[in-house]
Structure formats: C-alpha cells, structure tokens
Length: 130
Image (cartoon, rainbow, N blue to C red; front, side, top):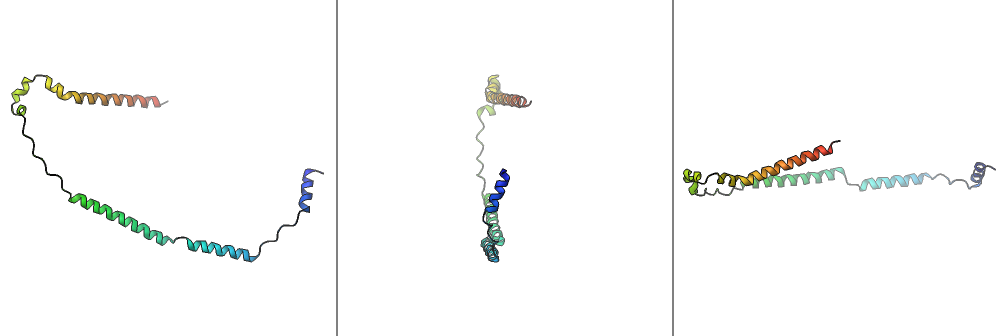
C-alpha cells in the first residue's frame, strides 16, 4: 500500500468525531461575554477622571503664575562708588598699553576656544558625509 492509502485507511478506522455542541454552550459563552463587558469601566467615568486631572493641573499652573506675578524682585543695590581711575581719565593713560591686554586676555582666549570648537565641529560634519 502507498503511504497516503495507509493514512486514509487509519483515518477511516478512527472513532467518529464528537457531536456538535448544543445551544447551551452558545448561551454560556454569550453570558460570559456580557458579564465581561459589564465589568469594564464606562467611558464616562474615565472622562470625568481626566477632566478632574486637567482641572487640577490647570489650577496649579494658574496658582504658580499668580504667585510668580506677585513675587517682587529684590531691591536694586546702589551702584558702587566710582573708582579713582574712572574719576581721573588722565590716570588711565599712565597705565599704557598693558591694561587693555590684561582685561581682554580672558575674552580673547574664550573666542579662540569657540573658533577651535567650530572648526572641529565642521571637520566632524564633513567627515560624516560620504
């Protein structure tokens, strides 16, 4: 015998399939579905909780804005007395060229660092293109 014929013969010798379930099974399934649907929260309840949450959040934000509006800035401190160099412009000329270099050195260093960073960033971007 061929393999398919053997399989067919074995299937014919097997017991008959179970009978179809009765209408009571369908009724039990439908009752379970209705019960599960009744247990889920209603959309209105979720809508109310969302409404309350947004209302509370809005109230907190409004209270924060009102508080920020009523906070006053600290009183301005009086300007310090002008140094003697500012009162005597001729004294600045006596310092020569060293004062501007001394004052501008930190800013010049920062500007150099910014240029280096920009150059490195440009090189990294150019290297990333094929």
